[in-house]
Length: 286
Image (cartoon, rainbow, N blue to C red; front, top):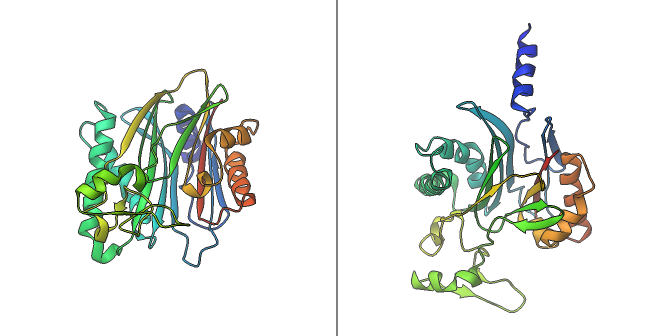
């Protein structure tokens, strides 16, 4: 048996065919397929003058004889260095936590904090920017653990009904905490609420100049995958500013190919005049 045949058998056993994480090229899409799970991703650059600041991860790994689906959206601001750093380091930090298998939720929280500390320590090299994040780990196709900081979102569909698994960390909702740390939340006419008049999210990685008033504490949610589960979506706020959770679910429920579903969501967001960078991952359960 050749090396390629052996690799193919290993992938069949894992019920995934692995893909490389999608690169931040405008219009670049990736898909992965399996017997039971399919996943696809797509991302496009928005109409802003700065370079693309969204990064994503969509892959599978076998760790300690368990199948892990690793999915993430990193939406950067004021530069692409921080989301690129997250793409390379965050999942490794999570998986290297000693209590990952015992208490996955706790391990994710710890890894979010240690990763943020590393980013702040390297602020000279990485710059003053930051990034939101939503990460999802699918364990043996049975348990989904989602964590997030910022306003990138995870939404799952069960029996056609959308359920949000992440929390949008909006400055207005965390005004008391921000003010207790000496910051303020601006609310100017025609603009969204902003931390210290600058950042439109209350939690993020990086952003050293605002860190006293920001948090990197993730919200973590565990969802069991059952026979009612059809798919879940991860996407940056460029999608969610123009589509509700249920609209997104309804838009792709009849599309079987996960990669085509991810592209369809972004095309729909663009048709609704979204101007932001948009990245999207769809994971479907057969």
